[in-house]
Amino acid sequence: MKLGKIDTVQKEASTAFQLKNNNLDFNLIDFWAWNQSDLIENRTRGILAEFIVMKALGIVSSMRVEWDTYDLKTSEGYKIEIKSAAYIQTWEQNDFSTISFDIKPTQPFNNNSYSGTKTRPSDVYVFCLLHHKNQQSINPMMLEQWTFFIVSTKYLNINLPEQKSIGLASIKELPHEQCTYIELKKGIDKVMIDS
Image 1: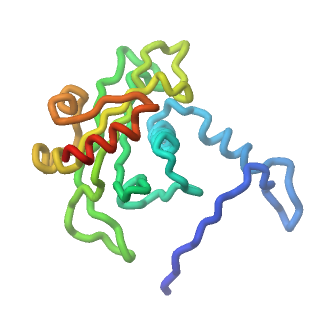
Image 2 (image 1 turned 90 degrees about the vertical axis):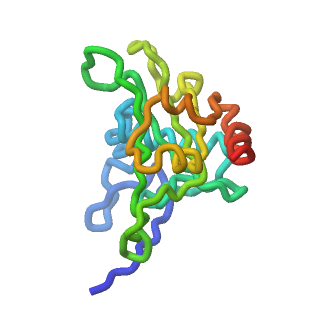
């Protein structure tokens, strides 16, 4: 049996859960708050980083696509891969986390199968570092607590073709742009022109 793709529609936060066509006393915003209030946790912070970059670039998107070959596409057609890291985690730590970002080439999934060829299908990587180091005041929604490092995928492919991860010092050795939230668009444009 072959099942077609489900077209997802953006949900309203106030949409109630139902039982036998009766609205219950909890809704979608209750689920979102329960599920994603920990914005420091790795998985949620990664999705939040995508959202932050999307807003900085003025990309209009009704919702995120989970298994796409890249994370965002700009109006200029630039395909962007977004990765995040942080010094502070939600769990107990003996020291700050070592900063590392995933850059491993992957097999794109198209038409119900993997391509067989490992690649980096984006044009540019945006490495989003939640750089804040104070546990009492860390808040990923305060955009001044983030630093963004932009690297052309071309440079990763030339210098690190098989590498699976990259640290902050290695990023700084490559041609890159380091910027704040408000400088992101200009930084991506510069990296794309220079590469």
